[in-house]
Image (cartoon, rainbow, N blue to C red; front, side, top):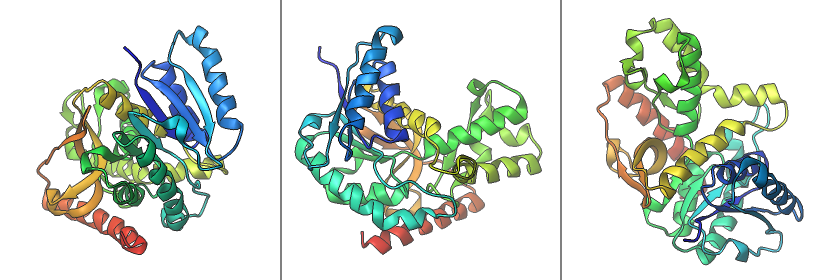
Length: 313
């Protein structure tokens, strides 16, 4: 049986770390692409040569797309898009909007041509708007275009909860919905430690502090790094989605998906709980929200809609 094939578009820190994790886990053969000529092939060769040590037969190859040639990506099962301009200190996600829209549009046009049956996972920021762009440009059905944000935001929240409660991260399940921005909606009521709801374990002021730090998680790292943005956790989050799809796990994860009336939101990519399997987004899970939680989700989706409207999507 031939291995699955995953293309990772963008050979920067997020893309190359995503590729490395997929190869290390032997989930699929990986094609790493970048507009630079040389670095993607060099990184892929480096990964290939680590195989005998990490005991993986999954193969990595690198391809330059400088000339617009995406032929090496043909027949991919999943395409992860990380290409785009990174956020710099003091830069809002919105500043990235138009520059990264042009990048995503050009990439998706080529993906559709070479891998018409693939599932697209968008990582490029501003996440929700870029997923909407990929959806519109591709013409794919809505189950085959996903945005990676909720897995990352929930992981950040879980790491803060585990530290605060001094417990294993394996005991913690956090839930963060909404757009991938300052209006994201962490849900303490649905976040648990060994099945115990967070409000039963921590006082409100500690939970509020965790929620606030979760919202600013990306900016906190950008400010510390001085140049560039997070890549270890974002790549791990993307790979969790890739694995759920390739292994048909039916795993429920928070992802940005196209809502068509669910949660009272229509025609927009917003983060909600989704069942991931071989068909991509196989089911949107609708959970009951309090009036306050719902208001926060509607506010978050309004922020996403503003960006989408700017792009005329």
